Image 1 (cartoon, rainbow, N blue to C red):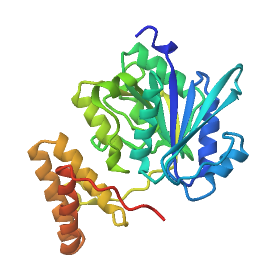
Image 2 (image 1 turned 90 degrees about the vertical axis):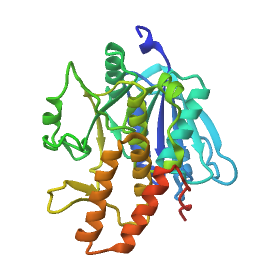
Image 3 (image 1 turned 90 degrees about the horizontal axis):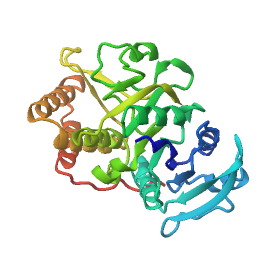
Image 4 (image 1 turned 180 degrees about the horizontal axis):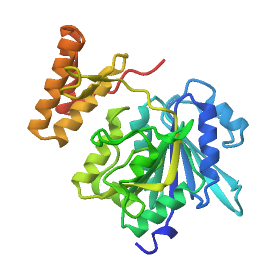
Length: 334
């Protein structure tokens, strides 16, 4: 892998109705000390004026309509930190909202078809440090890793993690505490995926693309589980930082915490989360672990939610839809 640093890297940013955040993210991607070779903006049929805003900012030449098949426009721009370099901005306008999973799937597919060696993927609300790509690429090459990510830290507090692995129950939600797990600057088998994640195309060739049917919530975890199942080593580079808004999630104690916690959703998209949970468990978890999780959720709906049989039945239905790989894309957002 001695020549990996010389290979082509494309950034993929998935966006939906967050034009200002998108441009903030895009500006930082273009200011990397190790420049990307192209940027793919995958617009999930935003209903605000994202295309017009990008046109006004000079990133694209004209707005594209979400009607009909997906469209792509390419514009070549000078790269600010490198006066002698230019970069291609690929604006991909999806004809419907396919969620983060669908957007990343589309971006990775296009990058692979265009012959890029690495893909660097993120949501529109993340902000990579200016040396993030350089650090990720350097550590991946030196440690023979094909899938690495940065430390994802709270946008408003760089000492606090935005995400952490649920199985690291003994650590505080702090950057310094997690860093203690690093070996030569890498926390192995730990990655906060799709938030500035650098993936070699060798991974995509071996395990396939991101599962677009998952839409949101769990597609990143499923891809990591699939990679690990195929003996692909992953890791977090502690010298690479990615700022991201604080995570908003609800975790409820089961039997006052004696059986741990479960993640619960009560919004209209709860079925997506439970379905994707079922898919992950059905494909990658042991029977014993699946039964334990089902028992925890059953007790949650019966005890914490005071015999909410209706919601429990819904949970079972969505969970087993995922476990049996029966996916229906969620309805289009209006």
